[in-house]
Image (cartoon, rainbow, N blue to C red):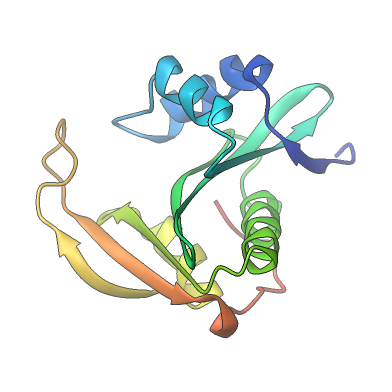
Length: 161
C-alpha cells in the first residue's frame, strides 16, 4: 500500500467523502452538509487520509463546549478497512482535542454497527444511553458513547473500520 498521511480536508475532497458516506451509512450526510462542515472552521475539524490522490478515510469533529467534542462522522472507503486508517484519524483528532483543552468526547453510533462499537470501545468509550429510533430512514436506535480524554487508550493494533 502506498504511504498515507492525515491532512485537513478541503471542499475539493467532498466528492470522495460523499462516496465513502454513501457506501458506509444508510443515512449519509448530504454534499451540502459536508460543505458546511468543511467551511465552519470555528468549531469544526475535518481531516482525511489520502492515498494516491484519493481520500480513503475521513473524520469530522465538532467542538461543542469549551471542554467537549462530538464525533460527527467517521468513514473508511470500502477495500481500505482494517489498515489502521480510522484508528489513526481518531488518534490525531484526540491529540488535537487535548491541545484545545477538551476533556471529554461523545458520539452516537447505530446499535447494529458492532464494528464501530469495537473501534470506539478499544479507545475507552463507554455506552451511556440510547437514542430510540434515532435514524429516521431505518428507525434504528443509536447508542450514545462517552469518554474522558484523559482516560483514552490509543489502540496498538490497526484493525478498525
